Image (cartoon, rainbow, N blue to C red; front, side):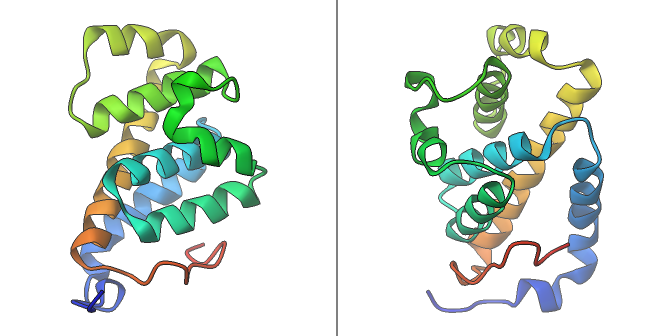
Length: 150
């Protein structure tokens, strides 16, 4: 893919809020390994190669297994995920598609506090924004190193 704009060189002011959201999420009560699963699944849905590379590496660094990463696109049909993870993945898919029905909300509600659900939604919307930036101004997939962005 032909380079367009160097997002990280030219977009520092625009990206500050995304970096701040990421820093906030690292300290939220949504466990980081679950956030990484959500980031990976949403990036799959959006076809963001750079984010898939990044979040597969970060997920593995937080103890995620290859089997679960390989099966995440079929999470409903696999036995690998907890009820909380399934609720988060369902919510992430619904928010990403802008199809958050009452039934989706009722399925996620027992697994998250109200504050956690807001934080989960922030995680989903943040990765969707990163995906859109990286699709608009592609970064080279495969170059990410775990911990590169702090």
